Image (tube, rainbow, N blue to C red):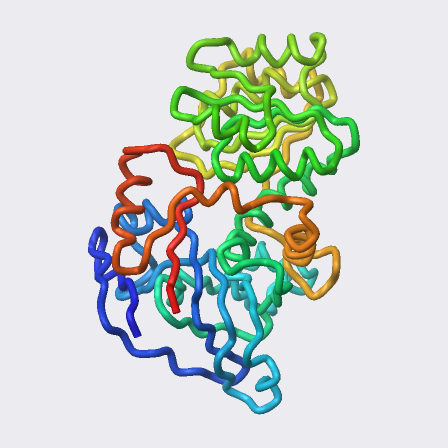
Length: 347
C-alpha cells in the first residue's frame, strides 16, 4: 500500500509500505479520508512520534474490508469512523469508563500506525459506524467534533448561556456550532489571522478582532457588564487564558481546550479574578467514547446525520496522500487561510 511514513523528524516519506497484519479482535479499514490535525504539525516537524517509523494521522474514516476473526466478518463493508485512542481497560480511569484519561493507552497516528495511508488496522471496539448520508470526508471530522462537544459537556452548558470562545479555528468553530445548537449566545474573539468572512459564512456575526479592539471590554459590552457564563480558551497561549479569566462572569466557568505553546504566567490581578469571581475552571482532554448513546462520538455521528452540526464547510482544502506536503506547508507556515485540511484517498 501507499503510505506517509515518518522516518525521522521532518521526513514524512511517501512510499510503498506493508499492508498491516491483523491480530485477534482487529479489522482492516480502507482509509477514504483523514484530516490533518494541528497536533500533527509539531509531531511531524518538531517532536516526532513515540518511535520511528510511524504513520501519523488520527482523524479518519473509511470502510472495513477485512476482519481477523470470523465473528467480526459481519463488519466487512461497514462505513465507519474510528476512535483513535486504544485504552488499556485495566487502570482505574478505564474501569470508570473514562477511557480518554487512560494511564496506559495506545494511540493511532502517534504510538501506533495511523491513517495517512491506504489501510490501517483498528480494534473492533474502536469502530463507529456512520449513516449513509454522511460522507467519508465529513466522518473524518468526527474526532475534532467530539473534542469540541466534550469541552462544552464538561462545562455543563445550559440553554441561554453566553459563551465566549477565544480562538475561532477548527475546534473553536466546532465548539461555536455546538453552543449555538444548545441555544447559547456565541461570542468569538480572534486576530487578523482569522478569516472573518469565512466565520460569517458559518452564520456567526458576534466577533471581536483582538488585534484592533480590547476583547475584555468588548465581551463586557456584549453582556451588559456581566461577562460570559462560559469562557473557552482554544488557542493555547497565556494572553488568551488571561482574557478568559478576565471576561468570565462572576460564578462563571472557564474551559481550557487549547494545547499550550509554552509556560503560562498569570498576573496577580488576573489571578484575583479566579478568587473574587469564584470561577470554576475545567480542563478538557480528548473526548468520551463508549457504546452508550450519550457517548460524545455517538452524539456527533447522530448530529451529523440529522444536520444539527455542519462540518462540511470547515473542510477548506483537500489533497491526495502524494500531494499532502502542500497542506502540511500551509499549516506549518500559515501561507493562506485554512480551517480543516483533508487528505483524501480516491478509489
